[in-house]
Length: 369
Image 1 (cartoon, helix red, strand yellow):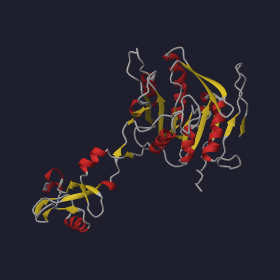
Image 2 (cartoon, rainbow, N blue to C red):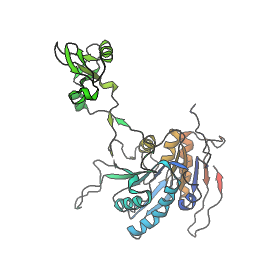
Image 3 (cartoon, rainbow, N blue to C red):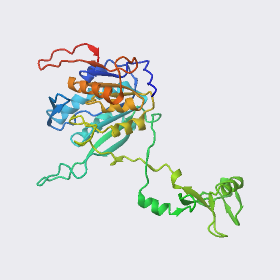
Image 4 (cartoon, helix red, strand yellow):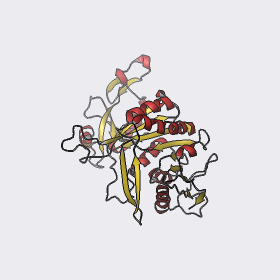
């Protein structure tokens, strides 16, 4: 049975708050969150209409602001609060697209500090289908941007991830194959960097009939030779080190992510939420920038993908969303996908059963689901 993450001593976790995130963020103490991911409105000037759940409840979602200036004025105080609650060792991801990304970047530089900007990550969310239609005068817009900021320019949590090598690269670089094992390998240099020099302390000796400055001591070279890790193609040639393909980590993950597909209509994880992001995307973010039992916050959590990813990866989490329908979907999803039960003390979802009527009635008190 998977171990339940410990609760935070500073704040309640594994909680969904329904209401204006600005109000809830102001109630949180400073420096209490390890990782923040937000996927706020994009200022796309669109209205979304969807049918959710088994009852096919109709809901409308507007992403309209009077101007880009109005959008930034809406989002700025929320980002100020998010910066306040982020730990110095923490990371912040802002998910956006072309509509306002340049203005968002300037705003975030002002709040988080230019020196704390880490990466702009490009997520290729479309392939053959895009918004370049016949008669349009622009290239197809096929990507989103994720701005990554750290709580401080050093000391923030970060884990490198690796992908598989390209097949053409493997064929060219690891062209040797061991007959008995079938393991691919390439030959690496054993001589001292730059040709070696006595002043750099590189050892000089004869090995397999070749005198050189070497990278390793004679004892280490002899041990590698006994292990079969040193190859001399013929007498008199410079020995080389055998580097196996299966021992390599792979290609370090870069800032362009084109290996995670968007949610399609046939995908089992699809809930019908208009801007739902794939679980794999959020899992990657959490794996890069957090550790087990860290607190993850999503202040625009929609259908709860970040919360599900956090629960599956043994992180604590807090979700905030203004939509009562979204909060109900999240609670049901966490029960269905993560097995959360109401009677488990450390695995419970509490939802503000809000009735946000058009006349602006107040939000009801938080109650357990």
